[in-house]
Amino acid sequence: MIEAPHYSSAGAKRDTNFALPAEYFDGTVNEPVLHQAVKVYLNNQRQGTHMTKSRSFVSGGNQKPWKQKGTGRARQGSTRAPHWRGGGIVFGPSPRDYRTDIPRKVKQLARKSALNARAREGAVHVIERLAFRAPKTGQLAELLGSLGVDGRKTLVLTAGHNPNAYLSGRNLPGVEVMAYPEASAYDILWAEIVVVEEGALTGVMPEPLPEETEAEKAERTAKTAKTGKTGRTVTRAAPKKSPKARSTAKAKAKPAKAKAKATKKTTAKKSASKPAKKKAAPKKKGSK
Image 1: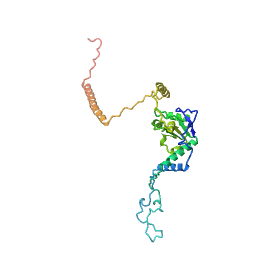
Image 2 (image 1 turned 45 degrees about the horizontal axis):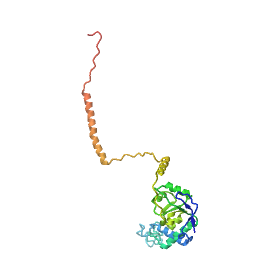
Image 3 (image 1 turned 30 degrees about the vertical axis):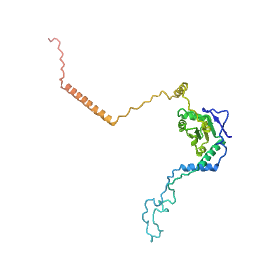
Image 4 (image 1 turned 135 degrees about the vertical axis):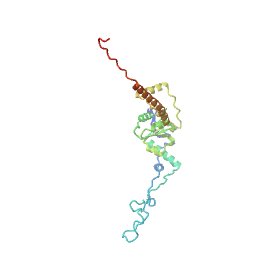
């Protein structure tokens, strides 16, 4: 019986190891089948859009470069022949489909062999559950750090579809998160460490997480405030006016401007038409 290290959902190591199910972990590794499965996987990833031009696709060369006889040179029929510079390519690649099929049982055997290969190396870690109420990249990074696998290529296998766990690991380099049944032999061999949720091996789906308590909410709020992510005011730019609204505003502003100009002109004319008041001459002393 093969055993694997067992961890709690917080990343604390348990005293006893987890006994892997003998149905899948019997210790046998079929290397030829693994090679076949990896080759088929890589073949199916190819697009097959490569192409080189043969002499029938290269432009030019519609006439003989020189006449057949009398020049002393070898006879030539086209400047786009393969032995000419700029000519066509002989036996070059052309678009094709690299799709390769593999029997279902062979695929299952390859997946089983890959899991056994990682289990024999001690690279399989079993965790009780991946508890994510929301996508948190930092939480997953902290969990992998507590397992001692940070900085290594890690494959995290969940018991079922866990969108929060997937979104948490999507931004971490060297970390892949997927459901346990979806992992192929190539995915398992690609990873240096395989972290499996306990429910994926036992077949018992984890219960939904309970709602967040008031104490946990207060703690999370205090932690967020400490990191300085709250209390930030976001200034939004004023919405741009549509061309129609702008033209309407201009049309409204024109009469007001014209009215102000006319008022200014009339005021100036009135002030110009009024005669200036003459100052009275000062009286001389002794005059009556």
